[in-house]
Length: 274
Image (cartoon, helix red, strand yellow):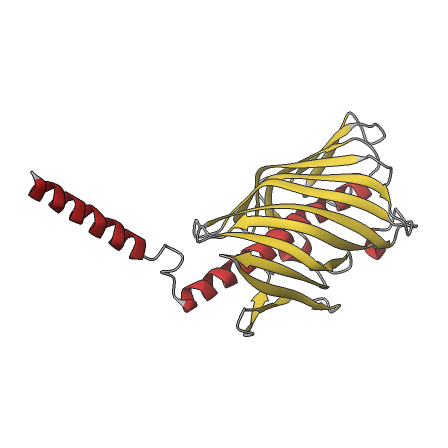
């Protein structure tokens, strides 16, 4: 009996020893694999930011034109364009090519409580079978006027929940954001969208196409100039597996590029979906 007990004890000790010595899943990743995860996370975040901004731009455009501007999309308001609250449906049907040459399909349904330039006004946009260039996009986006900051600028909170992007090959990425938009130009001309400039601060998070979670913290305010479809400047920190990388959107030039700086200082160009 003592011999059996000794054997069992020895087996248990060896089992614990080998288990303790096994590297965890993250430690098994090579440097190249970790780099790939950071690049993919950065690409997925940048594209998510862009796709949901595209949705926001389409909503702004539909409201600015009271539904006019062409045969597709079809834009309707219920009960009518003069009433608050109202529901606006932007219907791209089976698809039409619009701004940026993108093919959009499905619907954006927007619940509007008041003019967005009034304090506490809110716009809630939901997506119904919506896609851009065949990429399926899901989620809910809420804008709310939070009033004025100390400098007299309009501030608008933006919350995206249950964001999900299904790429053409079936890969899936998820994304959520909780940020504050501060209007730094165009606030005195509410009926002209194209002179609007916003600074964006706050945080985002997601799971990239490879199933790796990441966090985003804006370090230097991102700048969205309405005359440009992409972010024109700003810097954020993206964290994957406790490793921080920097994503820099540039110094004001309107392009679809961002520069990713890896922990070792290596730079990698990120191209946002055109």
